[in-house]
Image 1 (spheres, rainbow, N blue to C red):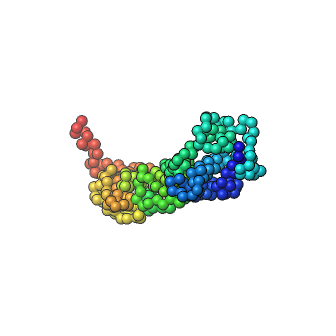
Image 2 (cartoon, rainbow, N blue to C red):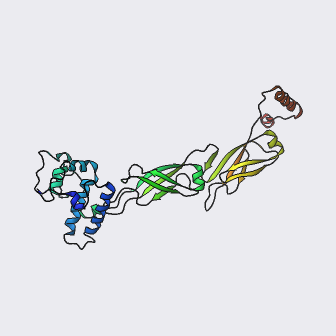
Image 3 (tube, rainbow, N blue to C red):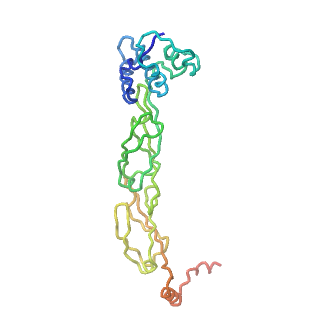
Length: 299
């Protein structure tokens, strides 16, 4: 049988990178695709470049093929070693040349008929975790390509301002490589990491705000953090623990921005000195306050 120099067929050197290999293949696949090409013997050429790419795109097949070195010339008579290429198993379907099947086994690759080598690549789904600040302000991230993508290297990802957990960012053409056709897309599902101070409810931001008993009883003006910066908040006299105060439009931005809710948490000062104990004793005697009065009436 004839030896096939797959590197020569694709017009690349033996040390070609996977990216350049794919680029060379796609160029030739478009050139010779039977549906669009006017080249002589386009269908045969199309199958030939498809077979060459099938052999070289897979690292294991490429390493197996490279064992022969560069001593053979394209079209030169070739006799494989005994038993070579029988591991692939399966009967020949005429999809590849006898050389390919002798090298890798009959069924050692994908079908090479019609449009199968001109198919679009598959989409890839992955997850990306971002901070709440990135979700609020928007950001640019460099990430490694996720598992499942047949491409290598890093990606620049733009995080849009106001994105919420569960939303997906689409990166066109960054999924699995197409076989002569369009590459698949990469979909990154956003997860917003837990924050030290804030909680999220969709686009609303929730903050537990500690206040002193006298601030709750008498009212006060306090400084409150928001994702856009600090603001002054007026606490009404007689405020209760668990009471919510709404800061309109201070949540995640968007066409309909979320709000920030400040949940008041009354903190009791510790009675850890004689003076503090005496003060609490004086309060109990003078204020005539029973916090369980309503419950006791029911009981």
